[in-house]
Image (cartoon, rainbow, N blue to C red; front, side, top):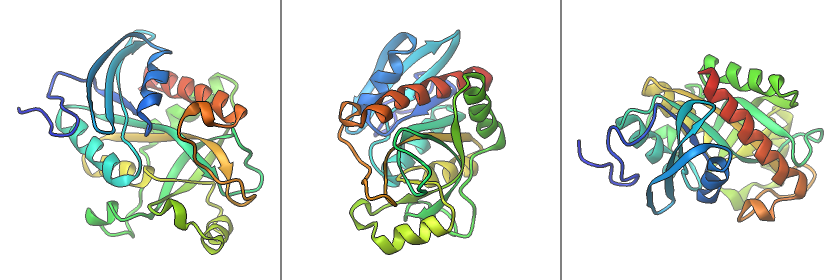
Length: 241
């Protein structure tokens, strides 16, 4: 099998379970909580590291921003043998009671994006598999961590999230907004993979604190700290799968 054109990996280069943050720098932050971390490849927005956590082998692969690049990552990871992907990222809260730094485990993602619609009807659900979803929640509870659990929305247009959109999402009781989960969930289901997502709120769109930071160091202090806690929950989840 030839190397995948974007991830630059082939079968045998990566492990069965992959944590998939968006930001390449977050790959290193996850690796810092692991043992025996080794850079596998780096190309464009994709940085891949193999590591070990509590005796479990895993791969960490960044996906960049948005569903198109996330879909490329999931497709190529699947091709080389990955069977489980867990998104670890940030999001913008859509409910007034979700504070900056709160962690959200997604039970599904509304398809306000175009990538998954190239694969299937938007009426088909973008949802994690039950085993991964449950393992994320169980890992949080085992750490005495509080996580919000519920549906989110994945959107393509970061700078076009108008007040009307935000109000509609809030009224629909969607917890948060980010840019990758809908494609990750949809593709994983179609490819026979397991998938989940845990994200940390770095802003609240209802309250007018816009999400988005160039790096973890630029996040509000609570969000920066809780990204690390979300990473720990995701890593513990690997040991449960």
